[in-house]
Image 1 (tube, rainbow, N blue to C red):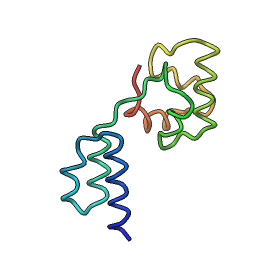
Image 2: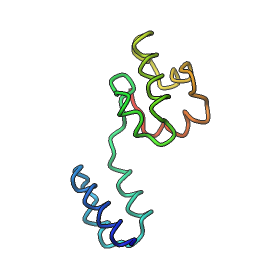
Image 3: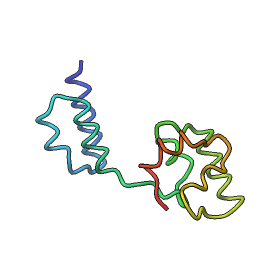
Length: 104
């Protein structure tokens, strides 16, 4: 079962153009594969990302993603990532958790 899941994950990663898929194939560890893939993910621009984009980040569901986009549409572009603290549902702990995936 794990082998089948690993092969599916490799296919998904290959389809999205991750260059680290080949070295990971030699590894049987899912965590190795995940950390290798995460190293290649581009950061999400908080001033251009859609609800669907934000919702892909672990810790942000569609509701919080929608709040971010709604705030941006109401008040304009974010000047710094910390401005997300003004969004309903985004606290310091959540911001620190998602910060590695965000950019301006």
